Length: 415
Ligand SMILES: Cc1cc2nc3c(=O)[nH]c(=O)nc-3n(C[C@H](O)[C@H](O)[C@H](O)COP(=O)(O)OP(=O)(O)OC[C@H]3O[C@@H](n4cnc5c(N)ncnc54)[C@H](O)[C@@H]3O)c2cc1C
Image (tube, rainbow, N blue to C red):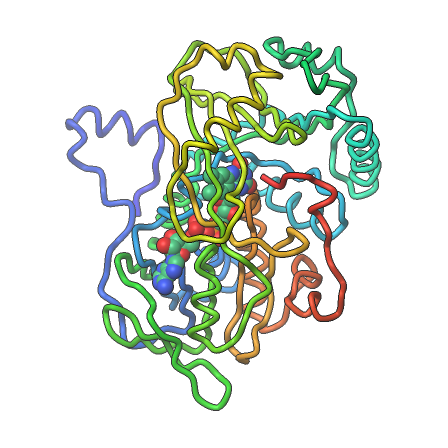
């Protein structure tokens, strides 16, 4: 595939943009692959990419029931940070964050990684204590964060109201190299690189069954017919329960809709990401000028990829306390994605009861930031058949052994 470059843009401009190649091929499935990945979201595509790049395994199909990146990867609010409390999480998310730093160069695709900084506001005394603890833990883990006072918050976010009616801003956990990235571009960049390595991305092809013999997977049934494989990776986020059901095992996860919305575009007014976890709302400004606002999950399990009115009302009401200017904005769009949530709010990257079937799931409300790290770790797991250091703690057996990686209390919210 031809490299994208400034020279290529000039060349194509001179010939009226008639020479661009398709970014990825859309082949019909072969009869058999070494590895099949189900789900062409960020994690599935990144897994395939690192299988090829790190282990030379390229006879790979990525099977997607819709269009690539059309699941949560294309629906999220793109916050990237690694300021987690527990050591295994900090290692995994920091690996991912550091891979984001060079992703545009590595993939030769501009993923618009914008390390503009992320603040998690402390608005209660217990949040101050919690975030100070996380800052200390991060220092030990080699993750650069700091606890900052209200005046520094105001310098970083001039539009903030420090003296909210219910919850004043008492400080915040600041990660300077956190930020955002362009979600579609992350999926497209990985897809282009996978296709370039000879992998097949098969869209509009739903996996409807997992075929097995003697405790091992032999292939999958799909809407385009049966396809055989030596190894299977399930990377389907909110649909993980369905796929596990097809394969004959159960997961410690529930699926629930998470919603977000954007405002009309306005002039630049906030150049960092702010998360207000006590009132529950978070906000950043997109390159187009829209305020990108994230809300909470629905209070019941469901598979609706839609927004609902009460979420807009609750989220905006919460944000208006801290950002009064939001009250004057019109909201343009809202949407939902189906996230797969575990009890300890940490993902599962591990083996399944079927010998050659592996799973990457349970990222819940916060897996976009983890895409390169999750893909890296899952590729290692699939290639070697055993988890490597990044994913060693994230197997499903932790729920049987009571060895949780508890980020729910630590984060309050996990986007
Ligand atoms: C509103 C919202 C805001 C969020 N904000 C953030 C944020 O700010 N920061 C952050 O880090 N994370 C955030 N997240 C979470 C993040 O989006 C997800 O954790 C991440 O995108 C999961 O990636 P994935 O590749 O595992 O899943 P997905 O992108 O959902 O990909 C899974 C794919 O599997 C496919 N699939 C399912 N079943 C089948 C089948 N039977 N056959 C074939 N294909 C199938 C689906 O169509 C889908 O494309 C947010 C999520 C939502 C919904």
